[in-house]
Length: 282
Ligand SMILES: NC(=O)c1ccc[n+]([C@@H]2O[C@H](COP(=O)([O-])OP(=O)(O)OC[C@H]3O[C@@H](n4cnc5c(N)ncnc54)[C@H](O)[C@@H]3O)[C@@H](O)[C@H]2O)c1
Image (tube, rainbow, N blue to C red; front, side, top):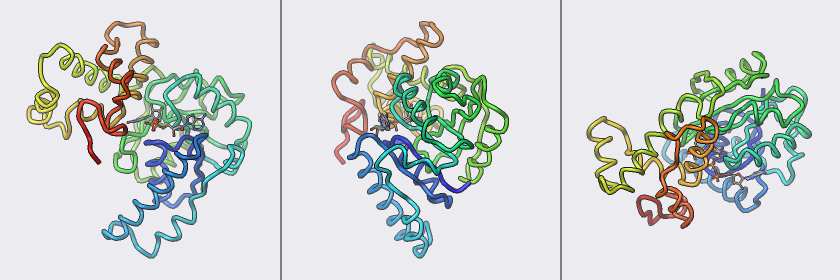
């Protein structure tokens, strides 16, 4: 187990690549958006340099680590990877197309993982001719900091695939929980309705963004409030996740708040766009 490929180098892909490189893996980066790819590599390089300057990582190792990260010009270039982690948009159609491609270009013994927050692994896996090798590998944001990874076997995923995924997670220095393949799995089944409810409170004028967040921070010792967390996740990602849960369960409790839809339509996507429930100037 030496080479990891990251497909989709946005917010999550970049941090998972960083974590993998830190753990000693060779990392292949691929994104259909060339600009995203270049930005991602730049972010990873900067972070390693900052970590070295702050003494968080051995300065002498940084150059070697950076040499093990390769930007791929075509998806075919990831063919050497043993672990492939898909981190593209939270959209079933996009993910199925990506897995169809990964099935074509990946080596026969590769584990094909999806970092989906909510989409059925079984549905993603059925786009390939090797559903036994497909697994959900749900990292939390920020992925290089957060310790837990949810592992989600689909209906056809073999125990061998699960065991390989477990070894990989351990090599990253992280811990795992195995979740069943139902929309939102374990973590987002609890987290996303709570955030959606916080958005409803704001929509109904029951509180301000600050008071809603403060209740959870000061009252329940949450490290951050649900609306600040929503901004960090990305409101577009959050909306896609809750819509997928609504689709999956056909249950009104997962109905996205109209205010969330409005913000996404306006391009208020949270931290990444400079504006969400809060304004960000950096
Ligand atoms: N944002 C979070 O807090 C969070 C947490 C856990 C899991 N996730 C999941 O991780 C995945 C990615 O989320 P994100 O927040 O990093 O999104 P993002 O929008 O920051 O990044 C997605 C990237 O995928 C790329 N992409 C789109 N189609 C592609 C294709 N066909 N091939 C290659 N690259 C393609 C885009 O160019 C973009 O760079 C989603 O499934 C999301 O649900 C997100």
